[in-house]
Length: 389
Length: 231
Image 1 (cartoon, one colour):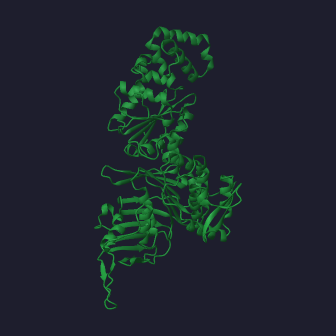
Image 2 (cartoon, one colour):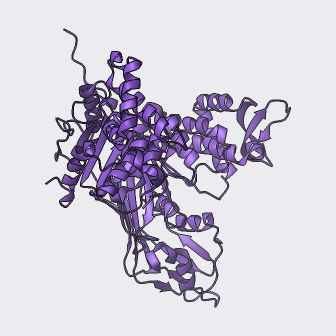
Image 3 (tube, chains in turn orange, green):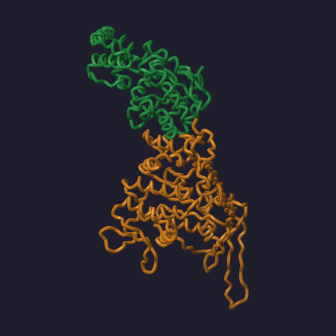
């Protein structure tokens, strides 16, 4: 009689996850120690009045029409995983809004935070609640309180008013500890308090903004120092036969990832080789650098040549899997989604498709599908990026 | 009625068959006999490939991802599969796919049974009927024969002359008989596709769907008329 073996985790994963059929818990599917966000609840944030995702997966792909809230959903996760209100300015800049402000403190505060609230209605607080296995279990509440004005007295006659903003950011970490952060606005500038909430920052790659070369170089350097860039470089070399190596070099005393390109004697900054390749390298490095973490990528397919998509996706998926990193990606590309399901192979069950749509009252509703359903829809030739009803 | 997978209204019933020809047949049958309306889908999906009997799960998922709201409001799914020469094996094959999609134990235990263990309820219609060998073509033979009895007899004679009974294969016989019959009777297009026979008005007389041979199927489909459930 043969030995009784425990069914593999893969074997007990159902082939399809249904939007309207009760989700069956699957203990043991994920590798031991793997931490991830399991559910997300968003209230009163940008276009989301009341929004919930119950079953996050390792790879979560968000699709939907322009303006439906794909980027905002990534931003919500990013803010909740951050630790300072300053990230709101970062989000503004990624959206193409200026990071410089003028006017009265209240005007500046409105510019900073007003659009975080759904329909700019600040009466109800913004709430973003993440539930997961570890430090990613946390919540962010953004609410309006009373502003405070401090006017120094004495000195040489200048009376510099400092306004502490009425917008309060309150993070609650996985232990239940609450950390509050407010913003001080004066003519000297804007001062953001770090909330002091612990891990976990995450990486966010916006759709339009270029990847800061210093940040990418710093992550690459950290991995290189730890001897962890070998596999990544080998993978990129297998995708691009003209690429001999990647390394950190300095330009004008600042570090940047450089490529050794066949036929060129000098190393070339990767950004000068290809913006898309530079972005994918940066994403892969961020994934490798963010073990047990979260990486968010808006419009992940941007700039990638069609015949490179499958191999690039395979690289990202493998890197994420090796580093137990959870991915939240948005995409407009059916071609990319098709490549994703092919690249995932037997691990297609690691994928969830989140399709956002506006209902008749302009609320955002979500239809969630498993990787097998996504694969089936693509095989059937139906439009998986938008509903047909 | 050129559309197969393009229907937009919301009906609480979905019928999935093996290929586009079956879709056109069921559209025609339902319309002519004023039967309950179904969304009619086939396993080839929108790629209009041949489909086949191995993609019912994929087709259900394809419909669901394409029309999630409609799927959520479905009360019944009817899967239509060919018996070919192996009715039991083919029925089991469909059930396996139902179980794979909805979970083990979801499939009905026999053809025409409406299982309500899951929502939507699922039934399996094997054609030409229950345990008879064949497929849509064999189902259509009596109607085509009666539509022109002279040619029908001639085709019977032709099949006898070529020794078709020795094939011992009802499916092959049905295809050969119907193809021969249509080639003779369809003057404008001897190669007329079976789907076109049901889709295009000018060909409807070739295989009238009000023939008694389709009564069992019509009677089965009409049972879904009572608020989407079998009476």
